[in-house]
Length: 213
View 1: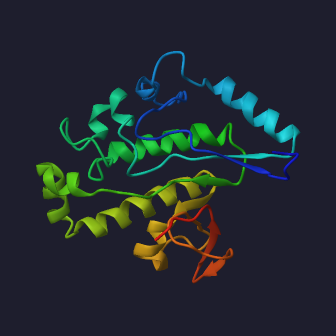
View 2: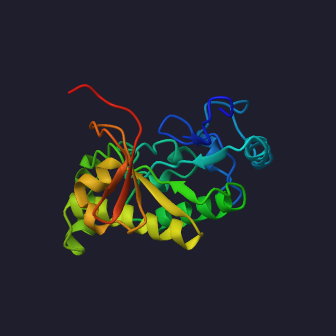
């Protein structure tokens, strides 16, 4: 990376298939890893960050919420909407946000880059409407699933900011409620073609890749 003058390693460390990193605040999260041997301890992560820093590379850690998080519930099934409907994370459960807070608190001790990536892409909200207790929560809070998606992303942003991070989110968040995002949000574009980075409204946009339409 240094030779190629690349100075940010985007470590998409957690996804729906695997939760491979140790989180001391919630130690059962990495029960969702592929296997015992396919895990990173906190010392492993510290070594990676230090190795990168010595070469002028920042490590950007991503946890993708609320979608792409099926692996979280292997250790903590209460994070799933239900046993039969396992993502996105349960928006109605305060424990969900306590776990996010614990992850980002632990991350802040290791990943010192000023940004945290919170994902926010490809959220299939059907589980929220198909799960009785979440449907009841939506009704009680006068929300539809679009409102709940926005609520989740903005609450997660506030948690990250409380730990000293500026936030990066995938472009779907901007496309759906860009005017509500924190004003320092970096919008990470991956789906539509933008020819240059820049700013739209309150947000900054960077381009990851293109997809043929």
